[in-house]
Image (cartoon, rainbow, N blue to C red; front, top):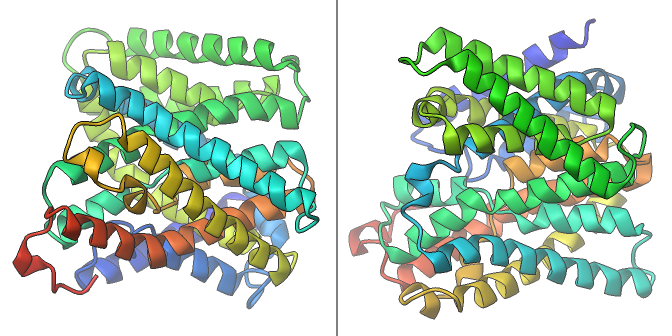
Length: 396
């Protein structure tokens, strides 16, 4: 069986499940963050029926790296002038401050448990888990808009934070990757960051030249973006850099300076959901060290929830009312998407035990983000009067 076939099968399963859920009236990834795909992955992986063995999961790693880079490119395209112009100075700072505070709080909580002997966690791995926990899935606010018909200032702030806060995670991936696996020429973090920026900028210039200044042709747009993503993945891997960080830089520069940025974002928007679904499948199926790691992952996810509450509270102090009066941390508990993708890619570079802890933490964050984060978000929006009274009785 080739390495491509399992990925094609997973994509087909993801599409089938999505079709069935949408027929039943679901929106977003299925459940709010798509945690049902994680559960299916666990069920068919080594911890369940073992239909998808660890060997097959390992065989599709090159395709996984390409998928993760594509999500990084998509993230970069969010930083378009049409998006940034609508933000005030306070909200721009909050988009960075909230995930940074969450990252530092979670790292501190993990260090306390490590010192007490509850975890056998290396320093670099703890930083990876903290970085993954800093991000919030944007599908939560999409769910609130589509399912709960929520509208209002607090939801708008949460939407912006969850859309742009992944940038901190991508920067962290660019720093941590050469630290975790110094296999390429860029073995020092400063050199690696410079190489990441240089490679991303070079690919952005290449994309701009190929796209041209005339009207955007759809077929050319697809070829250019897929080609840039493939080049980015191959070159970054060979240089020991983070593909998702390089692709994020390239996408960000294209988003900020290309006249086709809005059209490119719209063109590729429908690709994000199936890409995330496949990675959620693979993340669940990659767990094979037993349920002990998953229990530890749940502990990390609980700590991440506490860190998010703190980060959201402190970040909201920068904002004008009504967002300042709201406990924004309760609306930022959702996890998944780009964060899960980065966790999947970095876990493959770690030792088996440490990589399992990163994956188990990402899995638990996604599950708790659906089961705890969604009700918390709904309660916050009800208190902020962002949900119309007639919609408050709609089952979530």
